[in-house]
Length: 173
Image (cartoon, rainbow, N blue to C red):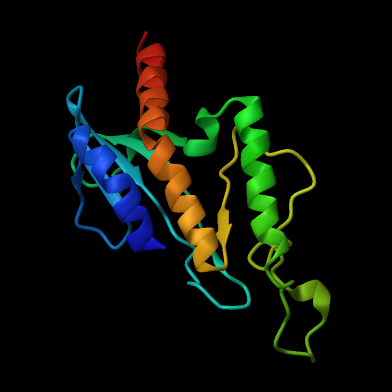
């Protein structure tokens, strides 16, 4: 997934002056208005599993220094930059993938189900609409899922970045 994202979003970001940051996550950065603008794809900390897939997110971040994880001066999850129709389409796409992922199981049958950390072992298909202010984890289980997400971001990263920069300008007044 990381290589697919790198190959899909790297060229459009490079054409906009971004360089690949030396981090464990797919991350690109460039100077912007006296600060550093970073585009980062955080991945689920438990990694990928053939039955349960994995997930990732996309964040845009402006920091005072080149460290992509510095305290943000401005920050947005990509879904916060989408309009209502785009957010609905994103949720439908993500739910299709989530529906293909096996329901979580708990490996200690002696422990009661109510003690399971369901935030970590979340039921993945969302029935309520995504809210604009929340972060959205994007699920993938198969290579097809990963390729579809990479193609999606390869085609939208430039416009998402433009929306984030526009948002920065509006907030700056």
